Image (cartoon, rainbow, N blue to C red):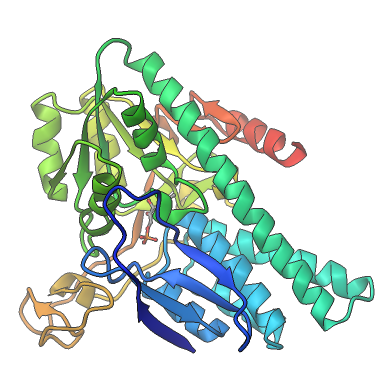
Length: 378
Ligand code: MRU
């Protein structure tokens, strides 16, 4: 079950938002999400008391973005264990909620491994649930630490690539504190550049069809006091042509072994534009987003979302229109829509991948494997 509750408004200058938190009220443990479908109009929380509610929250993007999906998956296993649900079934439901962001399966796997180890060593139900929760909390801490490290590595990389004055960064989708246990990925780098006074402008792609850039990145950028401007996705070309973009920074949902990057649909055309205009194109993602079991970009499963997200103006969570999907109709009734949630940027279009371990550049299969080996052996 999920219960919705409005929270007092956060002041525009208050510290970073938090996408999710674990709570233990007397009625039993819950996972509390900042409901991202309601932002920026409303800061409301969604309290999940069971895994089906959490799965629905993941599908509807109440919680979203690769690292946050990993945390939701890990806490979801802990929730199932603590509430006495079938943990293996819960894990399967969670992993199946969204297919592209590998962090979801990674987070579920981390909590499941701890849970299973506890059971195998004779722990009772309660202790096994505690082990799953400890794994989720550890992942949460690691994610916050990774954010801080990526922000610093990315900031230094930009200082090296663009010496001299300030820089104008174009970003796509939302990659800040809303997607992470810390300050995020690409947006965390932009925020770090801003803190050093070098951010001349953050160009924010609105990110059709669900407007993560318009709704969420502007929300975070304005709270951080960044100089930012919103543009429609298809205005990006004219911005490059006018020489107004110094670097593109995006996150990733899955990085294949060959260095291909799946990220929010619209990332690939930006990479092509960046190459044509000789602008650095940088991906910022933790090592948990790298999936060495997926050999190439073509092997990454791309989530296909319902057509009504394109044929209707849908603000997720707000069902206010008259179209069959609950939105305001934008196309003739019965129009078919192509609506992949992600696209894939091939490694040859990447300037660098920034992880918590450092910078991979040029992006090759060997360099990605080396980075992962360092991350996995510590
Ligand atoms: O569909 P979403 O909103 O979950 O997509 C999110 C993105 O594409 C982000 O860019 C990606 O998860 C990287 S965030 C670290």
